[in-house]
Length: 110
Figure (tube, rainbow, N blue to C red):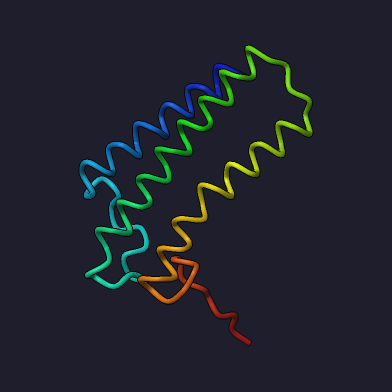
């Protein structure tokens, strides 16, 4: 399991770094919901999030080899780290776009 998580973490970190250096790598994900003047900042924040999440995942995988964590402690660290990683993106979205969630909400047809 360590090898899989470590490789996935490094791939995410590389992809996030690539998005930061070349925002066109991100594509059009979410473009319809973001104002054009905020698009570059949105992509950069997402790239940073993916890069940090990848580094975090790779570090947890490496620590898993060194130490044998109890399952509950591993889950708490993982959830706490994800919460810390997601907060800056949500805060930025709320400041720039006036909403916390960047993806469109589909209304149910009755």
